[in-house]
Image 1: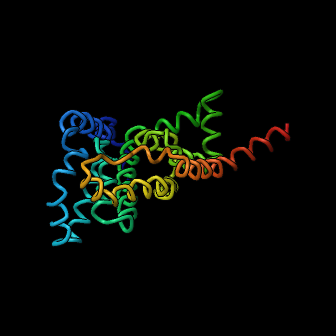
Image 2: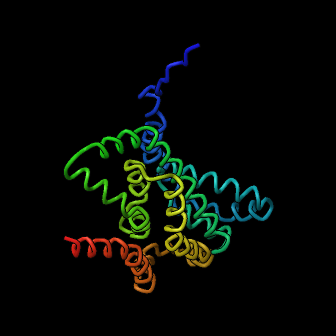
Length: 243
């Protein structure tokens, strides 16, 4: 009895999840922009609070499902979702709920990208020569530091930070851990802003989302970035000394 030949999935089938994400992201950006907004939250705040008070666990589950979908499909409104988590559940457990949901959504898009493109692209980079090979080797040698850096640096878009690790062959466990821990600082800041939305609504104002770039917030985050980059700098200095 001979073994059945191993057949790899159809390339089109492998790209289907990623293609679906891109299509939904495009449709969401066009159709949902006016719905997943701060104005929508302000207009429905009383109904949301009433439902939360009557169905707390169901509200947590529904909110997390919505947040995961927003991140996984790169829909507009991620910042509003984070504020909503703080508004409904306070800074804690709101920050934990927000960070967990964002991590799950990030894992979903990571898996879709790696299944559709990442494994083959990583193999090609590994087999290549010259500059491409050196870039791949540099990422592999400093994965933890690089993963934390792209999460901590506010200027790196969340969507980019989700895709790049999938395309260079980062292990799922390492990606999940660095994502969860790396988004905690920013997640806590925005969740705390959301926790104070009640007073903002009463004054008829909008929340200050630029708080992340205030010195008292930005400087500690930059300190964490420097700490994450330290192993890379140490390796670079040792490498030069070894020349």
